[in-house]
Image (cartoon, rainbow over all chains, first blue to last red; front, top):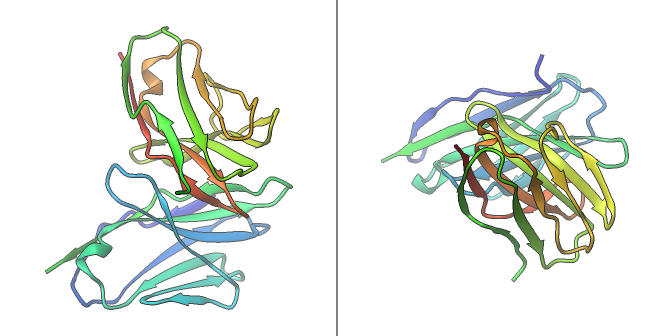
Length: 111
Length: 111
């Protein structure tokens, strides 16, 4: 089983739709969780951290389920500009907090 | 402006010709790292550095070297590049538990 798995998509949704991505991780000792956004041929950019209690930033909501070892990202009222690849990142501990990136989920928002 | 600067952005080289990709950050971050990104494989960490003169292997270090003689710079060295090192490379620096800032990427082609 891969350490971090994501559905590659693409998820093709109309503007205004609500879309959710899941990401599963295999290492139960994982400590920190994040979502990144990457536009085509550009560098990844940190979107948000994922906390145990769940957290929200505008139209974006991230949640963590430690028991089932997955994190999720919910995007409400999708905009055309949300089209991108969303990367799930899990950091394991050991002093250096080495991050492992998922392969990403592609989102296409159409008019 | 906080940034990570990589050079060059694009490079085509021949097998066996040593090359260096430079990376510099202006945020006084202690932690820096190098990744490669390949289609279908996502981002994979090559090397990381927790501070000056402290470097360690990531998941795919074979064929690469790094050095960290000063905090701001973290060059990636390919002593004898091979075609399987054709990839998109990102340098990153960290604030906290995950990569907060990525460089714009270096697209390397080895022929």
